[in-house]
Image (tube, rainbow, N blue to C red; front, side, top):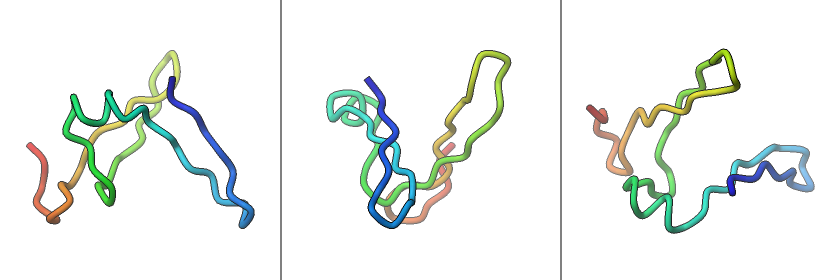
Length: 55
């Protein structure tokens, strides 16, 4: 389950289960783009950890 947590500073953080992150190749520091969808949101990976554009 993906969770949204709030830090003491008030910042919201999305937590993705480790198994899903490993399967999708998601690593700490990667950039995501949020897009509104009829039923919620779609997340798109924009950059890899090394700063390269994801295809």
